[in-house]
Image (cartoon, each protein chain N blue to C red):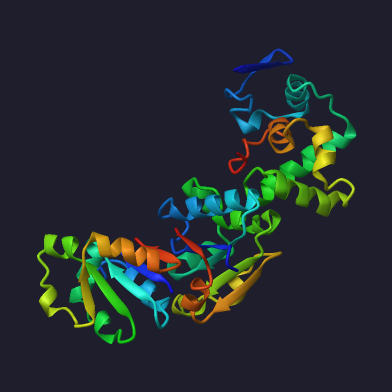
Length: 120
Length: 111
Length: 96
């Protein structure tokens, strides 16, 4: 895992541009054949929530973009378990077809395994 | 290049030749966009164009090369899911050229 | 070992909270900008196993008494900050 990058996603999807900037950075890295994984923490978990329909607020669906990750070769998604529980979200509400969602009890141990961590 | 004349109608393009309004797209517009790239559209082109549009509907983004190859491979089989195949159809840069002809925005994550 | 850099106040932002959730033994925590207000926050008291650093320019600018901070907090200057960055990997920025 030493040359991999971790994208740390902590922003809810539509309240700021940060979540979208994060996914765009990840997709750009992956398109350039860089190894990158994602860790969703805190409100970042809301990015994964199914049934997003942001047309009425004039935005594109962030979840649809996330669903493209497996097409870009990004198939590992890590999710902070306590953040998920705090928000009353069930694992089945945040699945991405073609990707493996792994619940992480100790996000710090995961972070420590990476050379580079990008925060969004 | 700022306008494309199709059947007497002026279709606005951006400075790189992509449609300004994605709703302007139809098959005649696609033929005209392809001519500007010196490509004559065959059935092989059309099946890729239609899949690109499906990709956009599914993921709300235009694919860079890597995801395009993977998606085409999943739908049309390994023979066609290869960059050389797409390169022959949409030279010199398949992700950009095919997105343009399909009426999609320029792939943002494609440098 | 990871260096966590927190730059927002724990009284108005989740940064420190999320950071502490991601802290493992041996990690270091550096407080900069509004992150230095964590010196006033009880969350720091419970961090026995973590080295905590605070950028002196930012705490002085805000009039914070570093003398009342927990003993485990080391008050540092920019040079020491650079040194910390070279000693740790990865570096994680908690800026919101």
